[in-house]
Image (tube, rainbow over all chains, first blue to last red; front, side):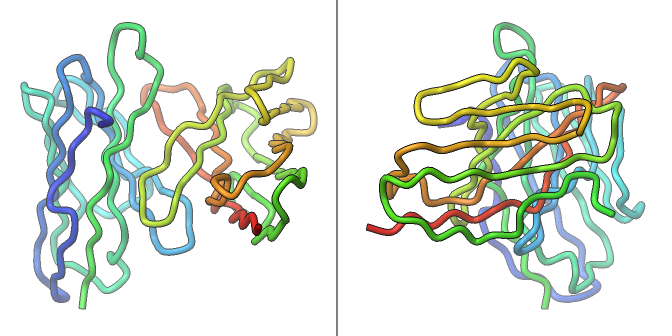
Length: 114
Length: 111
């Protein structure tokens, strides 16, 4: 149990559709980031949220957007899905206390775009 | 050029072997360094941080050479359970805690 839970675990969409992926983390994880991992590649940073505001973004187009809520949960939204968006989407949380600099990943949401 | 480059692999070694993975990074502003392990269809998990003085955790030894921008991981006495993909990761301290991952090196330990 990592303390970071993602849903759904798997989903299939068609090109042009929109998708929302969700992440919940335990209290104290005030920083959440999202990564995209294509097959055979390492995870790539999409963006990060701290106290409900985006404070860092990778090289992803605006159709990738996110939210962080007061209860530390988070969403990743992707509009106008493209075939290349097929990947494992990982949520990672980081927080205060003894684990302040430890990044904990959820198990991921595997998205397939047909 | 990728910011973090790793040996392409896969490495196929017998149980008990010693295996070394190498990694180079391009951004001299990188300040934190890690090795993550990722099992098939699972999330990455932190294996160990890498410090300038080198550090060891059981059968695993990590080394960092800041001048050459080079990171290594040595696994001694390989076990079947070590089979996984090993990701070299760097972090540049700025307003966001952004990890930059290499593409990973796959290790297969055979009986």
